[in-house]
Image 1 (tube, rainbow, N blue to C red):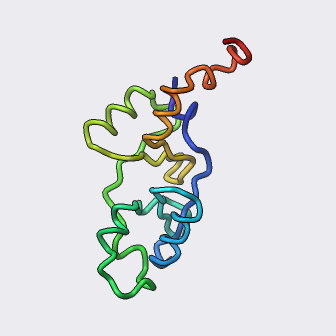
Image 2 (image 1 turned 90 degrees about the vertical axis):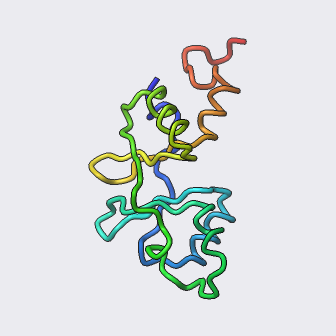
Length: 133
């Protein structure tokens, strides 16, 4: 299996100049913990996590731009990467997600929850087994 088989396609992204309040609201409203951050050309420039927002919660100014608190040293994978390799990267580095890039642009995101769904609902990932229990 490949990353593309279980990733969440077309992830919700924000721009570097969007503010922390927008990011917080998006995470709460959409029940997500990771937001890829893109530059003006739509290329990945960073990642904002719920943990980053918690660490920045001491700020009084929620209008501060995301670029001030986002992670810029982001490990990514391509959609054709094996699930095993993606899982190894996440486990060994204790990452909660990996943005999935095509030509530097977010195509998807793979998270711990995606692997958990695969473990719990393995038949759902195999179209040839639909309806067979």
